[in-house]
Amino acid sequence: MRRLSLRVRLACAGAVTVAVAITLSSLGLAALFDAHVTRRALVELSVQLDQVLAGVERAPSGALEQTATPADPRFQRPYGGLYWQIAAEGGMLRSRSLWDYEIPLPVDELRDGAEHVHELSGPAGQPLLAIERSVVLPRRLGGSGMRATVAMDRTELAAARNGFISDLAPYSVVLTVALILAGWVQIAVGLRPLRMIRQRVADVRSGRARRLGADFPAEVLPLVREVDALLAARGEEVARARTRAGDLAHGLKTPLQALLGEAGRLRAEGRAGVAADIEAIAGAMRRHVDRELARTRVAMRGHEARAEIAPALAGVLRVVRRTGEGAGRDWQLEVPAGLAVAADPDDLTEALGALIENAARHARRRVRITAVAAERAVTISVCDDGPGIPADRIGALMARGARADTQGQGSGLGLAIARDIAEALEGELTLHPATPGLEARLRLPGVCGPPRQ
Amino acid sequence: MLLGAVAGLPAAADPEYDHNRAQRALERGEIRPLHALLAPVEQRFGARLLEVELRQERGRLVYEIKLITPDGRIFEVGVDAATGVMLPSDLGGGH
Image (tube, rainbow over all chains, first blue to last red; front, side, top):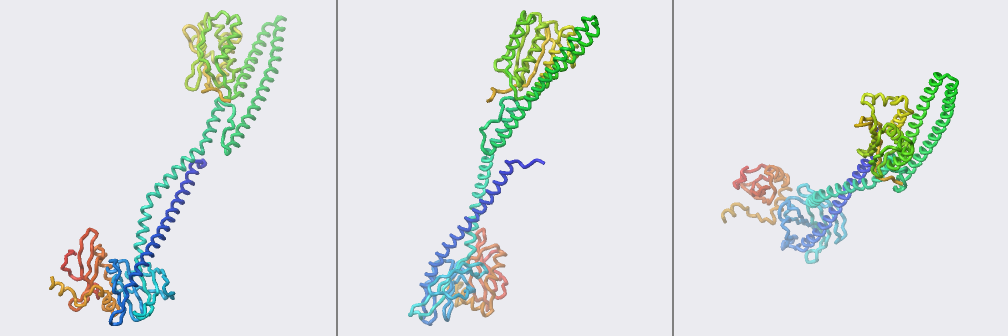
């Protein structure tokens, strides 16, 4: 089962956090707004209450009356939204807006003058925000106490709060989306070192770097160090394996040499037939040993190697030009400087040596060597102007262990070694008829850019 | 106009005090509470209350209710204050 990606994990957690935080803060703002509106409403009600109290007079009949009703038209219209009521001994005065309704005051012992805030129900069952005050009338008006109340519809306050919430909602949504996007960017920036690790591992694989390095954030550095330690351990293992392979080669070469010596003695004793048989068998064994060693060595070196073509070629030509076959040839080189392949320099030298020796042996006058980089691979072409090989024999020649020249010493073996190295490096060796001569094309994986570290 | 005013308004129809008359009538059980009568009217016309007057007409108490519709039409309906029955209106509204 694939685990949920870090990016999705972090993005989901971030989105949930942001959404919860914005929702909570929006609700908090709405509550603050509600408190603010209620406070403003209470201040207004207090002013209206003073106005109501100022208008209380005593009529000639002896009853209390309201001579100067507050100016606000909401007091006049039935169910208008603002209400006043005065309850005194022997009478009740009410605003017209209350119509046939009386505000049911709670039984409440009030200190004179103190304002009390109540949540009461209004004439049509709506909630009211009411303030109430106990006052004592002046002696001229009888000196009695009374309870004066001014109230307003709570629904208006609720409508104001709901309006505020619906005004706030779009901004909250925009803010939420913006924060989630910002979180996404943050995650991308934070996780970038992981991509860098992948790039470095690819570099190690293609031979451009030997280790991942130490320039990573502290959180991923332990992982990088572990990988580097693993690479170091593997490197040591490879080195030991190469040493063992070398020991094996040396161990087998001497007995094979001795076997050939014995064959020589048999020939000297006149048993040429037996000697030829033994030489053929020993030769075959040596070819197998050589090829297997070449293949093992190349594979063990892995893909972290890097070899420049031009210096390897120069080294091979220095040797070949000293031989009788190489001295008289016209060597034409077209190899760009700095072009490199993902191979150990020794292996590249060995493969090139095999091909060039083969070409020198068969060429009449000139050998042309070119190297071209294309699509992450480098193709090295070695072309001689010799007799060539007919196209129908090329397949047979490239068959495992076959030799082009049964008399010549190891020309087929040279091509076979070059081919084994190419295949071990995930490349290939192909032969093509040229006019005149034979072209050997060695394709090896390339490396991009200059080496690191 | 004077005739209309005399015919339309009962003698004691002082707007300052008709709510007190309404309250007394409600206490005596002669009429029903205004909010109970008003709710079906507002619901039926989808209109909002502007003004209410309580009048004495042919021996019974009638609420003359002035409403405004959301599209701005103002009209009046009469409602029998005791029964809540809507009375045929001569002031239009077309309902």
